[in-house]
Image (tube, chains in turn brown, blue):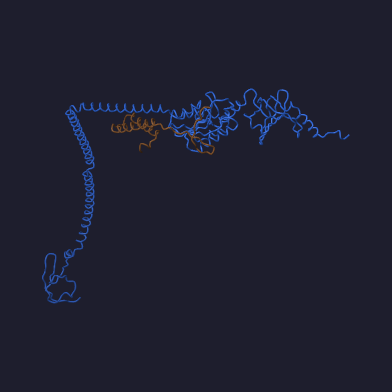
Length: 76
Length: 446
């Protein structure tokens, strides 16, 4: 799986799995180093994803059932 | 004379007109108690309204009773607005109810309690029916008025906390007669789109009448049947609508609903940072731990005094050898004993004894045989002696003693007949004590 394909959710999940495995403590050192590297990569990925905020458009379903963009009306 | 008599119909119609024209009877506000309540299949309601002294027949047609916010029940005290008229068929005056509400408590409150009871029994509020809200939603649908304060609060909060989520408003009327239907439709549209992982349904605060659509059964059904998890946020903290109770999660306010719907980016960042630090700390601890272990092993006894290790093993080897010898000895001793035992048993079964026995019985048989033979011999000897005696008696030589002589030819043949002898033959005549050689002088036939 390439980096861009991993969602934040999956990355966080994998990160938790890695932390849990390391916490169990009976991991051979070579494996632990692999986990650690993977973990650091994932945490950076999560961090990056959380940083890179792309404003998502808000949409509304119109009477025809189609989706169009929606702007909050300013307070009257 | 005949014309003075009225028909019953005419009289009844007259009375009806009188009553219908009386303005007081056309706008009655009445209070009393419901009894003999019957909700007819065709939608009309029939009942008797009574107090301690008397009663009046009443009817509430379907066109009116469909606006009732509660279900009339036997013995319920009610406040009624209606008119009096005559039901011609029975010639009976009765009350035509236009509006009715419970006396004492509000109609809406009663309706709320009644629906709550009903849905509770149907299991609409059961905890095991509640769907989980996804931790990281991608697309949130919001069912509310596109112009209210609620939508603004929800969108602002969602964007602030978790800007990654897509938001779609599914507009619905949130107050008034048509609102319940509109909310129901919006929930169904959202479900048909199949893109949302969470729905927020709600509106801002208002009076109980304004919030009422969220207490309607069709809204409850739509929420209950939604495949998408629903967060409900109707009014303020203190208002709990049926919609709130059926929803998978209830939020106190629309802002609260948005907070429940998405995680906070800031909190997630903290979490990721904390995890990162934890990871580093764990790795460091692990490496330190392993280093210590290596150090410990380097200084281990075995590495410092390897000779000792071998000596120990040698000693152990000796012990094992001893053990081995001992067990071999034991083994041999055991087998020897077994052999001796078998030999003993074999001796007991030696054939010599049997042989001796056989010899003994053989001898016994031989003795018996000898005895039998001896006896038989004795018997034969006696018989022989007896026969010898007889023979002696019959011996021809004995006959000679009595004066007879035996003559033989010169070739030694006993002469029995004249045919054996010719004249001048030499013959031998035997007497008991001599042999006489004689010459035959003559053969004279007898």
